[in-house]
Length: 126
Image (cartoon, rainbow, N blue to C red; front, side, top):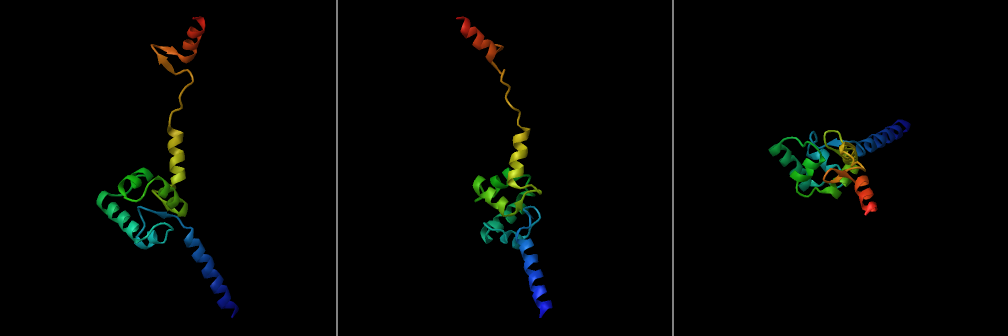
């Protein structure tokens, strides 16, 4: 009796681990995609068809553009449910792109070689 109870608890813990497992969109089969919250048979078929037709998805933006029904909001929800693209969750993908963007300098040139500081100084003189 105790062995059965321990086996049942072990099975429960194992299935909980699968529920929170990461599923890579480029490696998953239909069953794995269907197991994610927010992905049904229609969407998983669309993902698999597009992956077969156009090759693996490069990033979240590529997935959003190629699969009808996946946009910005839904991709965030799918990422929270455990979907990844090349091992990257949507939040990490967005963070890494923001880190790569160059930040504007406060002395950015505004007109004819003048910086904002120089332009303001000229305006104060007049």
